[in-house]
Length: 344
Image 1 (cartoon, rainbow, N blue to C red):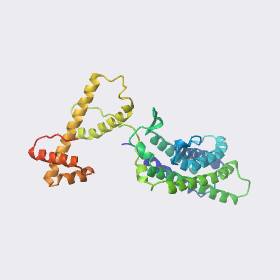
Image 2 (cartoon, rainbow, N blue to C red):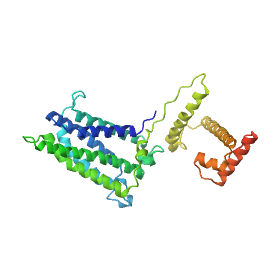
Image 3 (cartoon, rainbow, N blue to C red):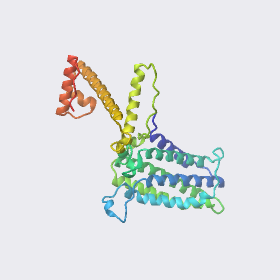
Image 4 (spheres, one colour):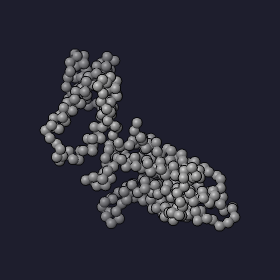
């Protein structure tokens, strides 16, 4: 089963909510642990915004219209300042075993790990190639950089940042009622809180003013760009198993076609044998598609469905003269029991 981005985004939000829901007093060791893990978490949030391209101030022609990077630039700068305030205090804290970690620090650590893994998942759809860094490497790349998905991502990150800033503010209020001077960890948290609040406000403003309505379902459905493993062939395989492996093989072909498309014409490994194999694979694919269309058209004729309407409802394609002719030809051939070629 292919992992999707929502499997990392959801648990990250749950761990952040559990961390900020803690209402008890944090001892000094827990404060140090929280600062260290909060530093990791805020740095991960900043990397998400860093993936958005910033405009080049020295060359305005490269960014004629404000894009995602320029809109989220204030939030990115605010998160960078928050990391700078947390990093000195976090650097002096030793690593803590998972069993000895305070619940707040454990939740913050888990949230940072989930968000980092989710960012790695998004990066599988891009690669450094001849087109430059972060070149699209999958069919999902355009969806990831689209306005609705970017708005949904900014909305999630803004919510996390706002929750963290509010938690620090409440922590400072509770600590002010206790005697004694604040520790270095609390001072670091106090310094980071306004920058986190500013980053959350900047992301929310960018989302509301510059993006289409957010599409969180699409954001959570982004899969990892990894081909499924090759199923080992067997000697005697039933038809049901072969049918289950057709989508897997098709997905592997999609990955291979997109990965080698940029080097296909200049491949030194191309030979007459490879061309013959490509032609044979194309013939097999076309024949299988013809059989599928023939079977579907025959079933549609048995149900009494008009060909053009069936084409529009089942395939989701607009009715055109070509689709109508193809549907009529397939229906006629299905009634006659003869194979027919589909016009392209």
